[in-house]
Image (cartoon, rainbow, N blue to C red; front, side):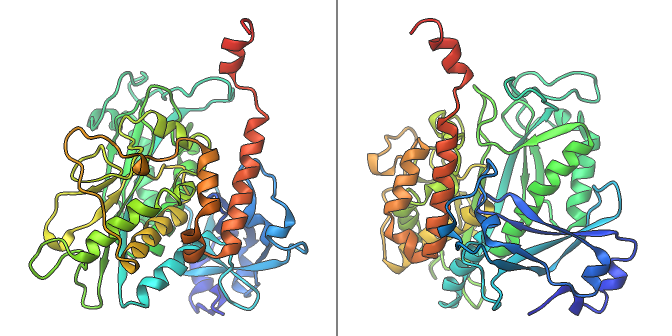
Length: 447
């Protein structure tokens, strides 16, 4: 079993570092882990944690122990090669080791979202193929908000003003928060995350960061790590970074678009045939996305708030129609050269666990190839969405679809699907115990 202590340069790399964060994503993609003294890391101390941590809900509760074992035994946090980084945003010298969860015998932990993505990628590798993905992360920046009953507010920029209106692609509005974005980009570089582009999106104080195409596990690692450092850097600048799918009413939601393609062992894009036209594999991949992303929508839209984004469809497609370069569809084929032919999945929200969102998209596409599924005709201009391609607009329905999906249990571990469902049911039950301000405002004095 590999460990950081096997690295002969480790002591030098941790020189001056007091503590190392051993970090993994739980099922929701939230960073969990332990903080270890650097001396113990250099000495090769094994870091362990209880399986139940992987299933922890957003509320801090845990599902029934049967989903992770009544004894709640330990798994190992094994550092991922190349993912030990100094954290430039920390007030004191500190490092972060991004880890994968493995069982005590060294096998992948079956409650780990990263393990599920690895399992899907291995199915491609068995065919001699390598999937390639790139993510685009949208997020909002707000001022500190101690009162959760009050709406978020855009921050005050260097000009002493708050942004007003929608300033899509406005360079000036980005420079109003220049110190934040300067440190964000330098922090990304420090932890090895290439930044393709940063832009202002359509919402009020909404932004987007684009990543480069690469191996799915690496891109998921980078997206997960980006969300972590985004929050940390924002706090340093008196801001809060919000990756909710729909943080503001009457404003666009935040997505995590996933561009995906597949290459063979010679590096050729299998979505393009010898005559430079779309291949049969490309059609079947689209057919799989259309047929099965609806069953897996809970992996792309995991929270109550996720479905607010679909109910207000401005820039947030709530369908699995596909098109050539039409952003009204959930599945878009961008204009490109034949060797760069790819599919953009516009369905996932920024709140999704990147490992699961990428895994779901790749799994549905591969399932389509394996079963030779055919897609619908491409949507053009204004179009009607067939009922079977319309996405669920409630968390209740999304849970039921995943419960009934045989495809999900074929492509992912049964234990993971059951544990994930248990986590989502518990969060939904918790939400249903809340009474919202809307209910008090409109029902409290008239019903």
